[in-house]
Structure formats: structure tokens, C-alpha cells
Length: 255
Ligand code: ADE
Image (cartoon, rainbow, N blue to C red; front, side, top):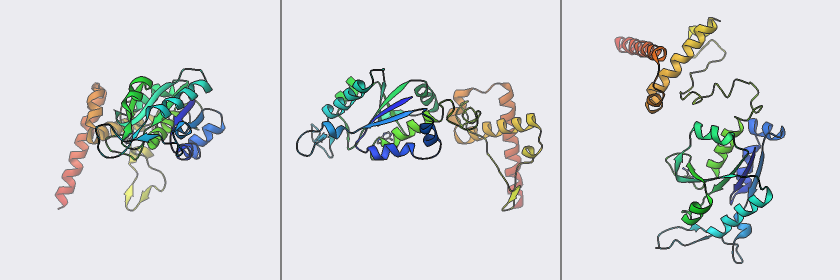
């Protein structure tokens, strides 16, 4: 897969490939990352890429021309079609379904906004999709672009050491992940759930599914509503709720 990123801070974005899974994947040649600084196409002695907003108000707006020139250079460098994504707080909140779709494409061009935003005409004419990292404001789109790259790369075949790791990630099935434990068996007075020590594969899987459903119900009811659990999951969720109620009752009883 090839990523082309339009950014005023190429060193920042390039650091996404410097560590861990994304570094190994780059070394294996699973993806390429190219950054394009729109300042190269900026105007005047200072190679300006921004100007004051029409209508007044605070801050500066990224201009059409340097961004369009960077995207033209990207197309020239490799004529294979690239889906163009802008990272802005006005975009749809990024989710695993979008990441899965991106990871299936041969190329992605990511445009990082800075300042108060990007001239709307660039978004209208050059950008296919606008995505956000979440409902908060970052100093620019770079961290969001890095999140997209990281999330895509871990889905590329061969990127993760263990074949099952990506399929078992949170959100793969629309659920949060279950809790995980490692040695020692008891730490700070807290024991590992006994189901995980049985060595009984089906029982362990059942426990993991119940905990994943329960956590999603507690923390992200919006995800659970979208999933519409079938009868087996509904029974596991009931069991989770009963256990929770019993545990809370026990705690209250001690008071
Ligand atoms: N740029 C500034 N804030 C952002 C956000 N939340 N997501 C994506 N890009 C951004």
C-alpha cells in the first residue's frame, strides 16, 4: 500500500513508521510513506501557504493553490488512482469499518489541515472524503493522518506477527475487546478470572465473548445497539448482568 501525505510537518508524520509494527511493516516493504510539504508551492519570499479568512475573524486559512499543487505532484509521481482523504474536525469520526475499507485500497492520499482550516473549494474539488479523529480539536490533521496510517498498516497481511491478532482486535466484530491478563496469577490481591486457567478452550472463548459483550454494553451501548445481539449473545449478556448485580450486591452488603 502507498500513503502520500500532504503536511507542513513531514518529520512528524514520518515518525509513524519509526517504531514497532509500522516500522517492521515498512522494512518488509508492506507499505510506502511519502510526505509532500505544500510550502514547496507556497507564494512569496516566505513561501506562504495560508492567508486571512474572507469575512474576517481570527486565525488563518490554508490556501487552495499549494494544496492542489501538492496533490497534482502526488498524481504525477504515481498515476495509480489515490483516494483523497482530508483530516479535519468536520469529518465523520473515524471507525474500524472505514479503516478496513482504506486498508483494502492500493493508495491513499491524506491531506492534513492546520490553522483555522482549509479553503472549502479545495475540499469540494479535490477531496473524496473528510474524516475526523474524534470530537475534539487538534492543532492539525497530522496526528489523525498518523492514526489512519497506523490502523491501516496493522491490517495489511503479514504486518502482525500473530496471524489472528488483527481479527481479534477490538471493533473487528463491532464489540470492544475482552479483558486480558498475564503472569503473575495473583497481583495486588487480585486473581486472574478462574475460567482463563481451566485450559478448556470452549469455556475460555465463552468467557471472552461474555466479557466483550458486557463491556460493550457498559461502555459503548451505541455499538451494541448497532450489533443487535442474537439469542446466544443475549443469554451471555444476561449472565454478565446477573454476575455484575451479584458482585455489586456483595460489595454493598459489606458496607
Ligand atoms: N484537525 C484538528 N482536529 C482534528 C480532528 N479532531 N480530527 C482530524 N483532524 C483534525
